[in-house]
Length: 151
Image 1 (tube, helix red, strand yellow):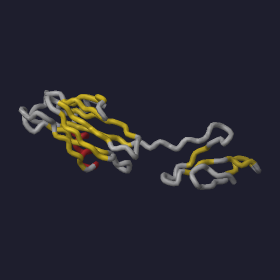
Image 2 (cartoon, one colour):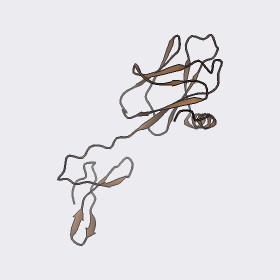
Image 3 (cartoon, one colour):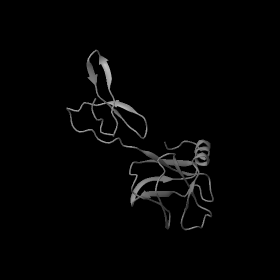
Image 4 (cartoon, helix red, strand yellow):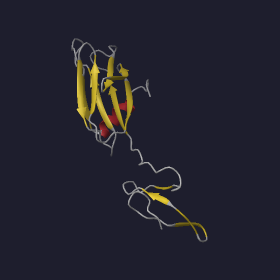
């Protein structure tokens, strides 16, 4: 029996008297093979999705530029959405939406469910877009209703 690196032990026989070592992720229950003679096992990377969508609003043809930590990650018009993978559980996400002015929404993404943000221009003359975090169920319904122009 050998330690798996995640605080659990597992002993499996592939053939009589020849043990095989496996890793057990205590958080997810996932079991995977690993060879202790190779490089040290890296911790599994968990990823969540940040989905920013824009339904038709007061100015559906006006583009909204999306930025994460100051880096452009996409552009939205009405009936479009952008999916951003996020892996850092400790870092706060700073999502900005820019037209003539910029709005920034900061939050710690949920790694147990998808993260959906509704991007909207309330009026055609509004200078800054509005970003609103919505429930995963609500966001999934809204994204399903959109024409998947961006995937």
